[in-house]
Amino acid sequence: MLNDILQEYVRNWLKMLIGEFTDPLENKVSQAEAKAFEQEFATDPLKRPCTIDDFRYFLDGGPRSAWNIGASYVLLDFIEQKRLIDVSTSIARGAVREAFLARIKTLRGEYLKLAKSAETQALKNQYNRKYQRKYSVTLFSTLSSLEIDDFLEAFPSAKGYFGKPDWPPALSGLL
Image 1 (tube, rainbow, N blue to C red):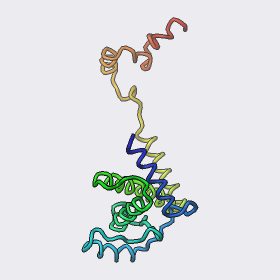
Image 2: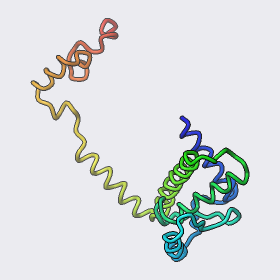
Image 3: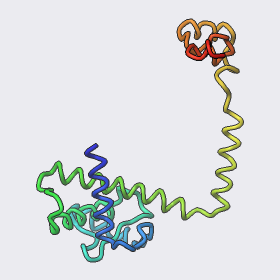
Image 4: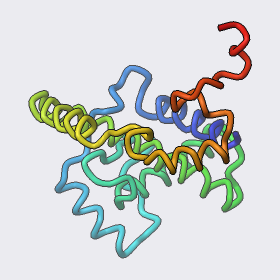
């Protein structure tokens, strides 16, 4: 419950940082910038890749890329500057950083989905439908009659699902 509230706050703070009308799925960081920052981040793990005024996150990289971890520090600076919540403890800072990285993971998934061509998405959907039809079988068709009888002894209320006349018990008098 508290985690959900924190994630909602992070979504709102992110809107405040990047601008209310800015597309959150726009990747503003190039691969070269991210690679250069990754080398700097290796020597200084508290380095910030951007500023509060020019906040950017890296959607082409993973949610835990050096750029996004650095951007989580910028978000914490923003929260402290605006006095939105108290993030003076390491537990609070860690929780906000994790919620931010979870949001980046969600945004990255949406970004990658939009980046795929319609043709690729259609092929994947076609494969998934075929796979589901090919491998979906009902419980009834895979069980032998002995297994069904054993099952019904253990769960007598499920008799109607297997063609037995005692189902449903509450409606049997009405039928």
